[in-house]
Length: 446
Image 1 (cartoon, rainbow, N blue to C red):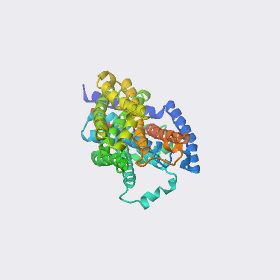
Image 2: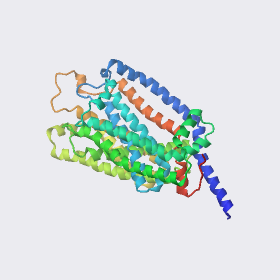
Image 3: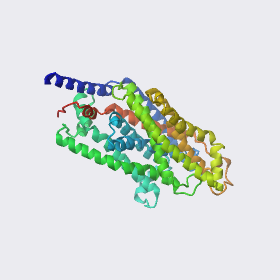
Image 4: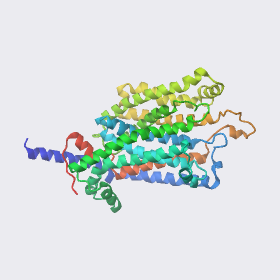
């Protein structure tokens, strides 16, 4: 084979790579309909938030005892899922695990969307959101709430940079190839590509910056969920008064984030026709990774309940009996069974690490992860140290109101909209990184 023939094959393979990945961005009517649906849901649910803003938090199910309800459970869940960016792009990236290349950008998109909405959920939980700035102006260093705001903001900034910087070479390609893009989008591509032409110096500096961010985001990612756990563990409430909440929350976040990534991988593989890039191998590897993180999470779950159950203090006794045998038993055991135990048993078998089975398992894991956060937040607040007395009966129970449920739907729809829009305007699979990995030569023209 002469050099001209070899060069032609290389160019054609890179052309195919570009066409396969950029095609869904240019013509995908189903995606546009999905965006319209999400915008409609958000518009309808925004009315519910307006009612809450107008009439106060009294329209929710929260009262004096359960002052943290559905919203805080959502906040913990969104923070958990966002940790997948740090797990895939940074930890596995620093370990030079090469199979993550086609899915790393999807992980970062999920991270950016969910951590951004996590910050918004806190504002949705406030009766006076106009006072959120007081946290920064008058915040005390002793308060874990100030730490939480700080690490969430920092994690969002670094995650956004980790999404954009590796995308710079691809955006330089989009600037040239996306001829049907709107003038605004073309300008976005032009600005964010920063005049990149893949010179050796540009390539070296870009990868140095990316590696620096990959190192920085690891402690920040661990801190974001550790600090969130401290909001609970720094109290004396039964069910929260434990020293393992930090690593316990981090392990649970890896499980929820990995499951969310698997579902997103399946969606983009099928709807974007990316079977050549998001292959069965990636689902198999993610299945093995999920088994590993589920085993760690199972270990912390055993620790969380075995130690207080062995000592069985009076307050812990009431709390644990309600979880294990009382009114919360169905939700508690369902979250443990479908979110941890069964996924481990099933995904040990290679047949369940195929795309469709592992996607279905991941859906159960995500749902169970949300219910687990709900079980962490609500039952503990219903079991204060002092007896609940001289209050109306509805203070002794907690049921989310229709307003709370609508605002919760709003937050989920917003996260999905962010992911969808980012997937619409940016390549979800890295073009140049895959070309580098496969040894394909390419040029990027100014």
